[in-house]
Image 1 (spheres, helix red, strand yellow):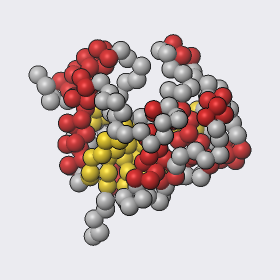
Image 2 (cartoon, one colour; image 1 turned 60 degrees about the horizontal axis):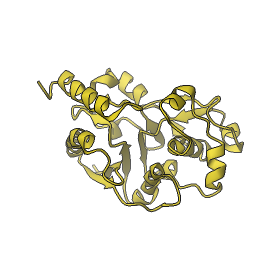
Image 3 (cartoon, one colour; image 1 turned 180 degrees about the vertical axis):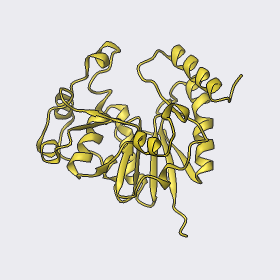
Image 4 (cartoon, helix red, strand yellow; image 1 turned 90 degrees about the vertical axis):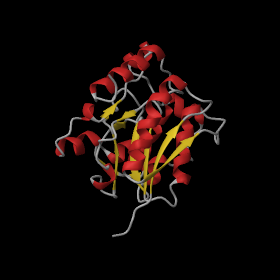
Length: 228
């Protein structure tokens, strides 16, 4: 049996909140060890003309010689008891934790219209084999102002201060899935089919103040039995 090369990526430019990564990184690394994957922190800018969140598109070049790329935002908490998701996600299919409708969220262009699925793919966790790494392909046919003009935060995102430049990765990953017509299934679907509740293995909340996020991560670790 051929051993697949896997890499878990996370993004941390300018040393994002250490109180959070001191909690999440050890568990990402434990999961990487479990599935025999490398752990790579993207911590240097390659696209300084774009919002910092765009740096996760470095993964496209970084997965040229990797069979599987798994990306987790650095505030994602992973239970190392989670099974190896690369064993259930087909190599011809991309995945993320979940997906929403793009109605009212993005301006549709020819790729979204042609694709027809109208998906807004969550970008906090994204998974693809090297057959489908176009999911992370940097933009080559739109300017930054054009991108930002096509993205419209939902009301709940606006209320917590999210602006189009902060959410550029959601739009571009969703557009790449449509543009290259990549097969897609959510990780939640695979977990459900395996009889696993995603709250038992993955925890992520966005839009929380730092102190509240640290508190909730610690509470989740207690729920999972890793803290008293």
